[in-house]
Amino acid sequence: MLKTGLSTLLVLFASCIAIYADVPPDSGYQRVSTNIVIESADDLADFRFFLQSGRIVKEVEVKKGEQTVIHPLGGGAFYGSGTLLAVRAKDLSSFGSDNDAVEKAVFEGGIPDIIRLVDHRFTRDVRTSEASVFKDSVYRLERNKDGLVTASAVTTADPIPEHAPVTAPFGVSAGIGKIGWATIIAGCLMTLGLIVFGAMMFRRSNQKV
Image (cartoon, rainbow, N blue to C red; front, side, top):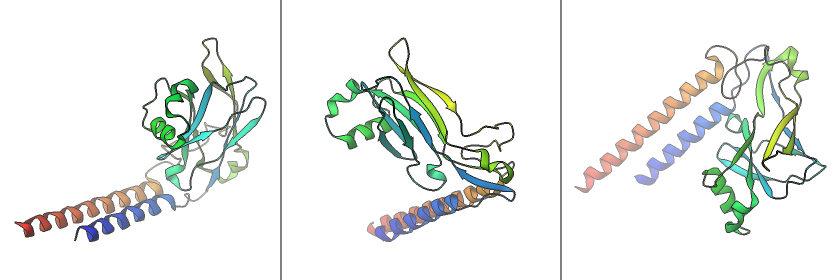
């Protein structure tokens, strides 16, 4: 009974993710994808860089004088945005070569003085007539007078923010829209799944009495 309940809940959860990820743009809009491009003329070897997106943290390599292109860590709305982070390498020395433990600690915020450099939307819905002007965002990483890392925009993916649809978090048009309705449906499915699971657990506990 417990296994059946868990299986049902997992199926409902997967359905919710699929609904949210696969909703097409509204009429007159086009979904565009843009990456993060980072460059630096400074030697930043005493820092390590990470992209956090969804429930994933992945280390990003930054080399002096070279550009690094950062792609989304997955598909769908769940990975439609990400944050570039910087951490002093010395603050991670206790983890040794265990990169999985490092990424877990960064995700959980268990590292002191994490620097939030860039918040980026990898996917967004924009007017079809304006889709061609959306390009990758380029940021220059530099060391400031305090020895910390900062990021300054060279070019941004959103060249016409006053015209682009403004909603949170991943870009939909005004009003509830299709993603809004999909989110409502997904929430209902999740609630239903929890109710079913709870009923199964209650019935199982009564059978034991």
